[in-house]
Length: 563
Image (cartoon, rainbow, N blue to C red):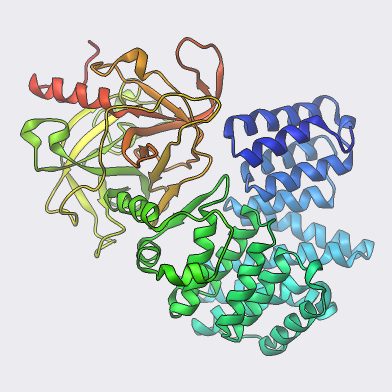
């Protein structure tokens, strides 16, 4: 198979459309083909698959693909590079380092500067991430990784600045962060000269020959000079190239927030971050992690300034964004009360939804497999926190580190049924009233033009996750179960989620709660009598949850029993 490889075309289309189920099937077909008939994929085909997966941020698939190629003896420098990138992006940099160091030695032996620069740059990325990891709690370790990152980026830059632009801008970003945090910049690194060289090199390129990375790199060079007007112009032009993908946007946004810390450097600098986040909201396969300060910045930005940047990009309206962010005010993190490790998500609702006796009282809803006093009914693989082990952190509040203990579990139902734990907290909440409207209906399934399901959850320790793309409603059985059913109905959708999203809220297009997110995977059973499995996420329809709780509480029961 060559240029017209149908498996690659199928994968490309699934990724462009942001269809998780189709993507999973396409990747499986590729892996099967490589394993059973490796010669059907040329080396160019192999590279195309890696680039497609990388550009659409499909890191877990990249790892599976890289391991498959290695096991079949099909790995090359290019495939190892993408495998290492995926390991870094999934939080396993130490696993990537031995491979990258071997790649550096190999490229030096072959006399390939381009390969050497690629591998050295990724080593720089590993140590850069580890520097940021240790910066607050281990200054010596942070300093060690900072120096190694500087050296890894600087060597290719010294050898050939014109071929190492991205190494140069990383040296600028590292220098900015190091200086801001009291770390020294090695004497061999000259940030002012690097910035001038980057600007000069890119300025000699014809406008039509500049790609996204050229403009993004130019923006970072202007950021070093604190020339916000030129930086804004460059980043807008980068987005106007028309080929910016999630991989590129994530890379630039990570630089701006984690290293340059532009969100904390005044309104002109913060506007660059806000603009990139808004553009991320229009990308397929996007999931944006926002902390309390990010949300406040998005809500308070001068929309006129954003409009002044002009764009044909897929921008959400201010009203939609404000409503979506408002829903997140009542979504919180469930953590281990002793270790503070995150376990899942919960949301604050008006107790009157579930019982007239609870009207006006703030109650919280999560999954039973997140918090349960019936842990002995679960396998060793799934171990929920007991209610006395769990606490809730409202990371968007004025006291984000406070852990609110659980006072009482009001009602619960096992994972195999409703998978629900309804509880109250001990003491006052930092929320006066819920912001999440709950509705009883689920939109009709439309195969040709799927309805949307949005997800807000709290997988990260200190930040909310807003899933707003790849939001297709695939199927549900609510019509079969009926509005008065006590038996849980299920909703299936492609909206992305990550571990820790359990207990999140599933919302319709009007941003009203239709379900409690509780599961996801590549082998979820199909609904309505259809055989087989597919790759979807799954929520429990909220109406049967309400019905079951009302019925049981009226009968004096606090735990669901099979009827």
